[in-house]
Each structure stands twice: as C-alpha cells, then as structure tokens.
Amino acid sequence: MDFLQGRSVETMAAIAVAVVAVAVGGAFLLRRSKKPKGCLDPENFKEFKLVEKTQISHNVAKFRFALPTPTSALGLPIGQHISCRGQDATGEEVIKPYTPTTLDSDLGNFQLVIKMYPQGRMSHHFREMKVGDYMSVKGPKGRFKYQVGQVRAFGMIAGGSGITPMFQVARAILENPNDKTKVHLIYANVTTEDILLKEELDSMAEEYPDRFKIYYVLNQPPEVWNGGVGFVSQDMVKTHCPAPADDIQVLRCGPPPMNKAMAAHLEELGYTKEMQFQF
Image (cartoon, rainbow, N blue to C red; front, side):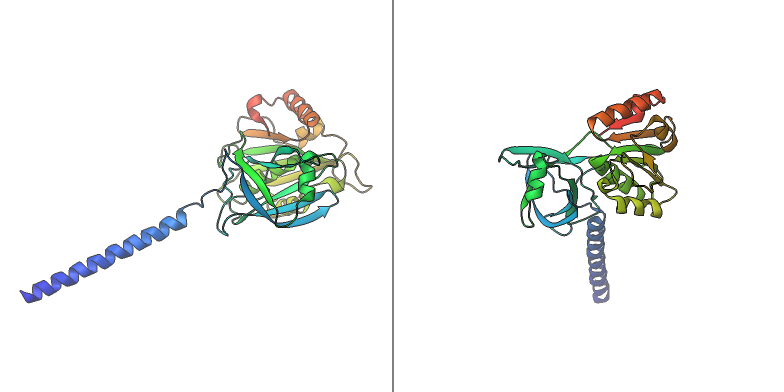
C-alpha cells in the first residue's frame, strides 16, 4: 500500500511539472507571436523625442524619433500617415500629415524624411528642431488599406515628397517573403538634388529586380541622363505602369496639379476609378 501511495505521489508531481512546463511554454509562444502594441492615439496627440537629425541636402533632413521602449512599434498600418503638430514662424499652431519611411518592423523608433520649404509653415518647425526636442503626433490617419495579395501589381506615380507613402508601401511588400506583388514606380522631380530616398530606392531595385522597377523623371535633367525628361506623360504611364486590369491598382501622390494631370492620363488610358487611389 505504501508502495502504491509513493507511486501516486510521484505521478502527481510529474503531472504538476508537466502542467507548469506547458504553461511556461505557452506563455513564451504567446509572447513570441504577440505583436507589439502600437504607440499612436488617433484622438490625442502624443509626444515623441527627436533622437537624431541627419541633414541630407540644403533643404532635406531625416528625423528619427524614439518610441517608449526599444521593442515598441509605432502602430501605423501600411500606407497610412500621422499628423504632426508644431508652430510656424509667427508662433501659430500648424498641423500637417506625414508618412514615416519606417515600418512597424522597425522597433524602438520611427523616421520622417522632410523636405523643408522656405515659406512652409511646418517646414519652419522642423528646421528649428534640435535633438532632444519633442514632436506632437496623432494617428493613424488615411483611407488606404493593404492586404497581401489584394492586387497582382501596383503602379505608383509620385512627385517630390509624395514618394514617402509609396516608399513605405513598396518596402512593406518587398520585405515580406510571402508577398509576391510587383511594384512599378514612376518618380518625378525637378532636379537630381530633389530626389528623396534615392539611395534606398536604388538599393530596392537592385535587391528585388523582378519585383520592383523604378523610372525617374526630371524637369531639369543633367547632361548625362537616361531617365524621363519633362513632366510625366501619358506614354510614360503606358510604358512603365501595369496595363489596366481588375487585379492591378495605380497609386498617386504629388502636388495637386500633378495629381490632376495623372488622373486624366489614367482615365484616357482606360484605368477605372477602382484601379486608382490617390493619397
């Protein structure tokens, strides 16, 4: 009888150890699979500290802001943007939308690439920002929603700082091994100095040659130039964007006159409203 009682105690102990092991293992897997909670609030502005400011050209800089912890994610869906609040040169409040060039896979920080215009109200705020200052941010904002496989291919037509949402979407697609979507980007600027994120875009084209194509267009090209010249034409769109089809979409983001001209080009080429999206 004592022998049976001893075996019973051993069995109960083994079961207890097994239960604890399963519980610990399950908790570990849950932590591994659980996405970091986003830091944004769609209704209220939150403060984020500027930890790095890198001047790229005379009027373009990269701003890197810290998130609460090294494992925090911003919590911004692909293709959406944030609202930044600052003060203009007269001290008046100004709020403007921006799209980070980072993804939620970039933990602990988010980055904005900002082109600062001489008379820009929010440009003044960014120009005056120093490392250690805080930026008021609210979001996410935007109508664009993306799911893997929703289209076979994206055409993208961007002008100037309109490249940032395109870059974010393209990066998310290309860095996802389960996403086979192809991306065809037309990017227009005035001069080569105006091209934002060129190094990153060229690296993407080199790393994903079968999935990412980029065609640069300049209004004032250098003497040696193998891209497009002038404004983005209907022929350029026809050549460098996927043809109209139910499983493609063309995204647009640029100055208002450019967006209007591109909408006209696309309509004349047979792209329906469902095949287009303007950021």
